[in-house]
Image (cartoon, rainbow, N blue to C red; front, top):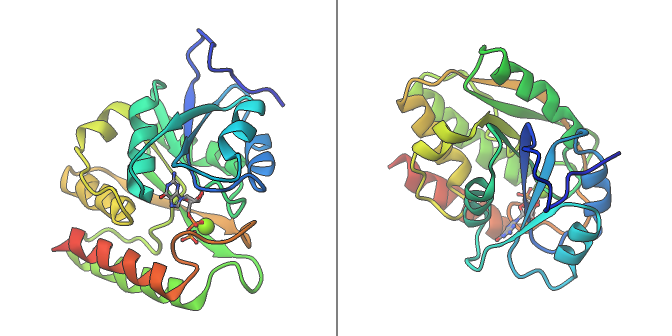
Length: 226
Ligand SMILES: Nc1nc2c(ncn2[C@@H]2O[C@H](COP(=O)(O)OP(=O)(O)O)[C@@H](O)[C@H]2O)c(=O)[nH]1
Ligand SMILES: [Mg+2]
């Protein structure tokens, strides 16, 4: 498996943005599964477990975002990207980045403008019940609001970089993934989803693994819908 380096002058066909907060244990699994020739852009937010060094040593481009928050990390990665196509994927080994080739294919062949991975939990513990319930409530609101027939607001995504930047996303916390879909729908984008297996993550959850984290995510997302 090869990885493009930070000094590469050849433009990667696809940049994969990986928000990362203390994911040193998951990074080797995740980075080994980035499709050949694509660039991994790991966005670190002051990890204390050496994530940035691990990512760099495995050939990823590392971006530092001082501002805390999932959305801040995703957006810093998007701004640092240079490829025509950009993907997002969590950095916790819950989702195999190799599956992104399927999402990208649909954007490339013009059948969709934004493709989301619909998470299909594999075994118990992959997706806590409260996180699932919160996600479902939001996705129902989204369906009513936009008419999009989606089933999940998952973190695995693919789209073209420039239109994505032009959406002008402003949320920098947990509302970012929902805001992306809401604004894309408002612009008339074709938003589709494709099934992806969702595995128990490596390490501890930073967002929806706790009641409090889920509550904050739902609150941020509801603010987007208002
Ligand atoms: N850079 C950065 N990454 C974050 C932050 N919060 C979460 N992440 C990363 O975003 C991804 C999703 O977070 P995770 O803890 O798995 O949330 P969950 O899937 O809802 O349990 C993981 O790769 C985290 O490391 C943050 O504030 N900054
Ligand atoms: Mg996770």
